[in-house]
Length: 479
Image 1 (cartoon, rainbow, N blue to C red):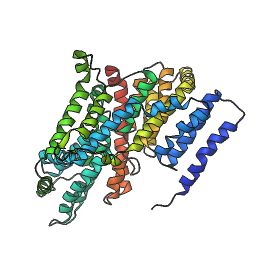
Image 2: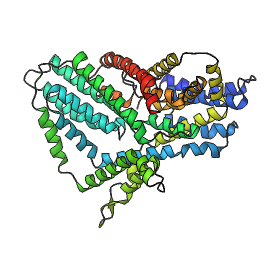
Image 3: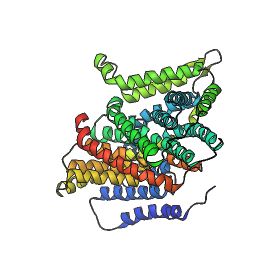
Image 4: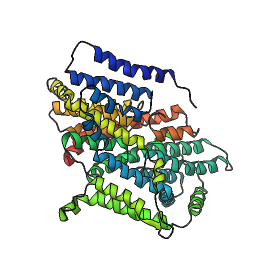
């Protein structure tokens, strides 16, 4: 058990101290309601940054503090914790749980790696494509945990071969390990359910601006961005930073084959999960087309997600024994805290808009005559480098209403700023603590902080450039 650090101790006391100090001040900055929301937001930010308590526990504060400071009644606060977007992600989590339970995600990953080839660079590419694909549908943490043991098996072969552990072997190892971590981060950007910040944004837009971004529409923008970013990461790793020219090994294919043989033939349970997975993804992608032909159905991404979840609990894998793919006890592995975090973020956003804070930001920005491009660049850079140090979900929860206010003040659609800023929150490649995939590969003991940082800073800068291009040229085409 780790000791409770001095920073956490300070944060634990500082959060409520800031709140009560601001509440007791005789000065009114905006209005009594807005001032209360600011005080609550600062308490939450302090706890989120210092991680004095779980970030999910911090997300419960609006349920207690908004009613007690007359910001809004608890019934209005509670609605945010039961938002449709929360249930969209719940269904996504259940689908991911089933993929993991029957080992289908591992089978998919191994087959992708097998197909890409056995030369060092192709093996790196295989690991990156497999990790990115899995991260589109399950958590980037889970996808990294799946890929790491397979990667370590291949690396072990190189360490134990005839020529020992050479410089080229080390370069290959670094490319594989960092490739897995970075493609897990980038892969999640491709879909609405791929990474929590995407879902926070979708929920915020639906709650505050009655704006819907469908699963398919997000993919139209997110998938090409992910592909371009992962391609650049791959080229930087294998061509620029860690070249492996001349490295030869044939046994990596045997490792993949052995792992596939260990899984055995595809089981009946895997077939059921695969069919449900394909149906759900098909419905997500073609929902608008289906609604056009069958308007009475009124399909939404959330309804499709819940349909998938219920199917996994109710379609029997063995009717005689009353066995199903998932049982309720399996949900102990569901990240319930993330769902609460969504609710807390949406509640905070609602408090900021209803109290007039967003309007004040918009008015201030509109009178400042700032350059739209410079403002977008500043916000993207701020988000990308701040997320190296704190939770990207918490950051989006706090900054989404602020960024929306800035967009309104500059007289541009809120989506133009919110989408690249949200994507920036998933582009943290420098530090081990920035994302779970970074932390997992660092914990393997094969990578040093400076090795991750010197590659990560280059990719961070490239990600900023890509996001600026996205803001300037591509988002207006889609929205």
